[in-house]
Each structure stands twice: as structure tokens, then as C-alpha cells.
Length: 220
Length: 316
Image 1 (spheres, each protein chain N blue to C red):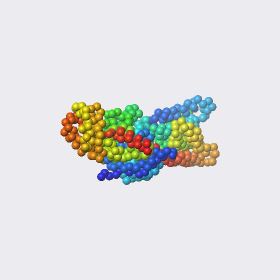
Image 2 (image 1 turned 90 degrees about the horizontal axis):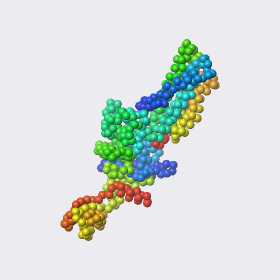
Image 3 (image 1 turned 135 degrees about the vertical axis):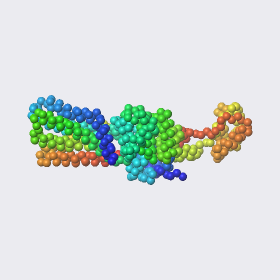
């Protein structure tokens, strides 16, 4: 019960925030800009591929930064005091935040990818099956990477004493660890999609679990 | 005999080896307004945070309405309202949105939530700010939103940490009246304050803490009694009293201290009961043909009492 109330609340907070508006509009715009300004792509590289690359690397990092900064600030300004004295589970505060940001960045990523697909459909007069398949791969890897980044953002938010430390940890920690689902493509072991998704889910759950255990022990 | 509602037994808490609370024990009865006073860093907020479950790694036992904190925290939180020293909300929230969320989290039924929000905002006097963003309100009004969220679910136990600091005199009066009214409705209130006159105005029981140790607990009268505050009657005369010897000779009077010949302080012998002695003294003064303008007990305020307690505990 409290999780759904908190989730709706957080979703409302995040989608109203300027950062999210920038992300929803900025991510597709950025993809197109990169595509147009890139000298080596030529006419053959689909925008969908470019968009996938941008989404995978940026959306997760932005989500992680948003989560870490939001948790650090709210911890510091004692916002949680009024929540923690109500009959709710402490972990729900973190999980609702994670889910809200994850949904928001997933929407931003979907908008970008759909835009890429739309442009490619117009350019090539259809979507070749190989492109569709690589797009699905990209979506899965992006979703997995965003999950890891966002959960790492939650953990960093819980443990970091300041926004500066949090931001550094996100860039040098969350960003690096989130690449793991993409490595399955390199090893070419077959079932890449399952492996990517599996690694994504597993790491996301582990990071969230550590974050909630630490948050439960925290003295406010 | 009132029912015991809250019991603290030997509650201790240390921060990196520093003892913030040392064996603090007291009880609060149902419907009491418990004023918790002490210097900065004395342990007031640590006690409060332990009682409401924000601090859970304390030693000792805290029981609220028969439930243990922190093991039965969820059950205690259902009957708890809390206003922190500095209340803070997420920036994007409006007053209405914040109260709606807190109401839902406190399990207020959806069909009465609207009515409760309006009632709480009207009570604290900011109904006209209902749809404004909290970050655009003044500090005093943000504090009132904090008060509204604490009252929203009509809790049995209200905890206020310095609720009156940052409020203008009119708002302070209003909040004190709200606290008194809630107490009449059997809500138990604990509040900490630096403004001792406010504590004196509304508290039915007072706890004094210094350096993590509870120095004393009781009603203001109990504290005065225990501190052996001298019983003094203050008299004002219409005419100048040049010779106070006849007054000093009155049986009930221990000694006389004059101020300017028109006003005297009469110290009553310790073993005598103040009201009875007052009656006798007034009668004798009239018999002596003194023109008495004002006559009444000089009651030391909480300020004096508090300073005495704190100084004695510092020396100890």
C-alpha cells in the first residue's frame, strides 16, 4: 500500500522536475545532433543504432545522478523524518524512488529509440529485420544498464555524505559497473539477451538490497 | 490516578563514545503535556528521536501505549504525530499535495481525507495557502504546514521538537492553544522548548535534562518544592513603611526584605503552609493599620528554577 502511494508521489515529483523534461526532450535531440554532426557515420549507419548508444551511456548515468543527489539532499534536509515516523517500511522509500526514476528514464529512452526507428523507417523505406533485431538487443542492454546505474545511484545516495562525493561515485562507480550487461555481446556466448537481462536484474537486486539494508540501519 | 502512557527506562545512547543520553527514565501519563527542557546539546532531540523510532540503536526500554520501541515501531507510528525542529518538504510539493500524501501514508480513508486536510489547515490558520508550493511559503508558515501534517491523522501521541521557535507571538499563542485543546481531548503531548515561559504556560509535567542526564521530572509545583524554593509574599503599601520591625515580628514571617519602603518581600518560615500563612499575615497587617495596596505570593518562574537546576547539575 505505502509503496504504491510513494511510487505515485515520486513519479509525480520526478516527471515534473526540470531534469526529467530536459531528459525526455534532450535525449532524442542529442541523438539526432550526434547523428547529424558525426562525420564518419555516412548514410548507412541507422539513427536507431546511434540512439541506442546515446541512451545506453547517458540515460543510466543521468538516472543514477538524479537518484543519488535526490537521496543525499533529502537525507541532509531531514525530509525523511516525516516519512519514517509513519507506518511504512523504510525500504519502500528507496524502492519507490528507484522505480519512479527507472520508469522516467525508460520512457525517455523509448522516446529516443522510437524516434530513431521512425527516422530510419523514413530514410530506408522500412526497417530491415537485422536492424530490428539489433534494436531489440540495444533496448534490452539499455534497460539492464539503466537498472544497474539507477540502483547504484540509490546505494550511493544512501552512503554518500555529500552531493560532490555522490556525483564522483556515480561517474566512476555506477557508470563503470553498468557496462557489465553490454559485455555479453563481446564474449559472443549465445543467449546474449538473456545474459544481459540476467546480469542487469541480478546486479540491480543486489545493489538495491545492500542499499535498503544500510538504510534500515541508518540512524536519523 | 492517570493512566501511564509512555515509559522510558534507563535509556542510554552514545555517539562515537560520547554519552548523549545516560540512563534516562520517566513516565508520561495519558493526556499530559510534557515539557522537555535543557540547554543546547543536553539530549532533548536524542530522547525524542529515540522515542519516535528515528534512532533505534539506544539501550534501555521505551514503551508507548504498551508497545515497545523499536520492535513494535509500526504500531506506535499509527498513533504518533511528529513535528521536527526544522520541518522540511520536497521542493516540488504544494501544501495540499504534501498533506494528501502524508494522510494516505497515515492510512486516513480517502473519503475523509479532504475534510481532514481542510480541518488541519484551518486549525493552524493557513487554509488560504493550500494550493501554494511549500517552498514559496514563509518559514513560519512552513512550520505550520509541519504542524498540520502532525495533526492530520488525529494521533493519540504528539511529539513536538521546539515547535514554537521561528513563530511570531500570535502564532505561538495559537499553537499553545491548539496544544492545550488537544490535551483536553486526551491527546498526550511531549514538546521540547528553549522558551521556558511557553513551557510554564502549558506543560502539566516538566522534565529537565542536562549533559544527557535527566535532572528532575514533575509538575512545576513539584519542582519548586524539591528545589526548596523560598516561600515569599510580595506586599505593596499605599504609604511609606519606615519601620518594618513590627512586620518582621509577625510569627509566620522569617525575614523581611525591603525594596523602597513601599514594597516588601516577606519570607515565610519553611515549615508553614503558604496560603494559611498569607491569610494570617494579611489579617495582622490590617490590624496594624498598614494600608496594603497589593498582596500576593511571589512565585519564581521556570527560568529561575531551571537555572538553579542546571547550575546545580553542572557543579555536581
